[in-house]
Length: 260
Image: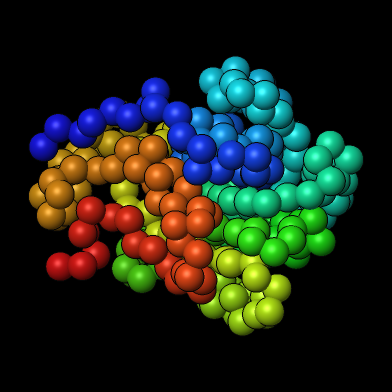
């Protein structure tokens, strides 16, 4: 089935909103930032590498800005929040998207690998949420990027999967903690989306990726992997007024892969 490209269509879904996307320089984060900008938001992205941030800002346009920083470093999170406060005075939409992972079977997991990905995926996301909350008022929304890996038991992917399971648990608890503040928090669990991280972090070659995509096509009812923008559309929905009575959930966006 042909996918209709709506990338040039603008809407006012997030008109006037201030949005922060962590890990916004590539992959799902960049696609989300681009979609939010088209939907009227003023977008701020973060990432570790300034060159990639500069390239992303050029693609996003619409007055988007970038703050270089590593969310696994507390001082960087503090600096990001301070910059947001100074530039905008508030935050309406937070997309806690920054994360990473690498393959390692159980007997090969190192303490350094464990610390690296729990610090980025879990600690970094948690404290980004905590420290931006003072900028968020009634009607604000938080969306966290999880993964179907948290529920699959994929071989050699235990640390990454565990970090995403921890985030799923945290979203439930945070939804309860935010009761009465009228701030919603939800997660998405993306299926297979080929991003630059497949090469840069997972170390997969073009041949590896092609073979994996064939497996995905066979296992997935929709017969293909997803695009990054399909994840962005789900994230935009959860952050929008269209999802005004949704909080604490994990929206699985995987083409049906884990449902059959």
